[in-house]
Image 1 (cartoon, rainbow, N blue to C red):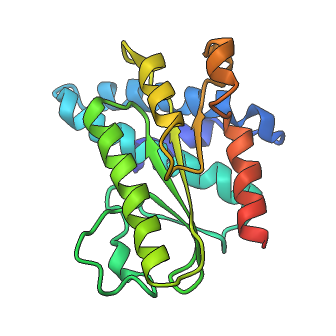
Image 2 (cartoon, helix red, strand yellow; image 1 turned 90 degrees about the horizontal axis):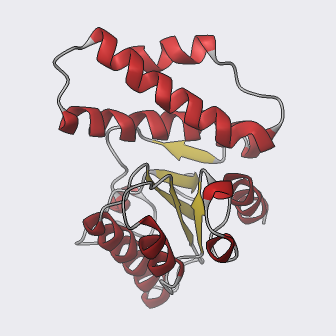
Length: 205
């Protein structure tokens, strides 16, 4: 958190939400540089966990600026136990969604955040989406939209994104650096502004 706060002081939020994607990339890059400067013995695993926390924090700050602070709950470093949400108290599998749309009583959306996405993370996202939707259907609960936001740049990224775009339980897959994707992927993968529009529509109904 101190690293993030230091970086944010020097990188105020852009006024135009179409600039949010580049803002996120800049903040994430500077967070990593600052962390390496302050903590010289930081391991790759520790850095990976920090990247996850910073990603949640910057998504919180950018997304709530669009949809409102009362509409999103973000829990960096912790996740959110699904059985804390009204209607899910008896769930015996416990995924930990990164971002909750609305609140514990008015559950509308989940955003799963993956700054990088290995194959095991693909399974986690798909399972979480399916499990939530299955519980909603079997218990006659209000519909919940499930989204994936990533900045995956690892080798094999295009294949992973294409697979995730075909997961029936996901209502949308979005990439921070959308403009860097192939033309084919841009047809099935959304941008961060696209996700913000989806969230605005989902949470306003």
